[in-house]
Length: 272
Image (cartoon, rainbow, N blue to C red; front, side):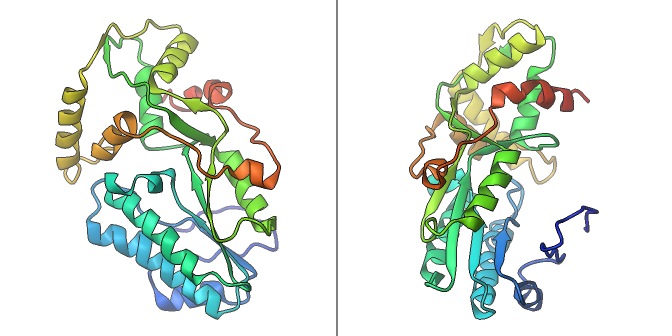
């Protein structure tokens, strides 16, 4: 649906579902650059819908953009693409990156940005659910993990997109976008509980029980929508975030946000 939003005069916003060849061709007419963020990441979505939305639509839009003479195509991928074996969504993001690279030319520059877990006002999904849970006064039982997590603020991600549009050195590769900090679930739990003034959890679930819960939650997601799945489990216990190509170093800039500094605002937004 159309969202009422003020945009700069030189930004064109067109609304419509993809993949739709006519809409893709319409989007690309007389544009200098296209930033493609659309996609579906829902746990309950079918593999066919995920492919249609995240791979087919992306490639169709890029092909139309090249044919229309668009100079730049910025694809917002995901840090999940580093672990394509962990979910259909991650696999499709990785495939989209690889196939977009083959479309790039000297006159059609393609850049893939891999934002880590995004935080900011109005956020949804796993991170919002986690903060809401940690904001409960009584929390005797929780899960524990020291695997590294990458994160980035929404404002920094927007800055990264603008910088990517202005850069001549990013095309043909995928770039990790983070706030240049590394986090762990255990550290986040500690920081949040300290911030709200509540005691830390006393007991922690064994990993195998978390895995069983994730499998059951994913199986039930078509009937009871939720964000906890095997993909979430793997992100917490099997993925160790590592920056391969640092976006900020390449553009000679620095992120301005930090998850812990943003906590007061983020927690306030999750009180309801």
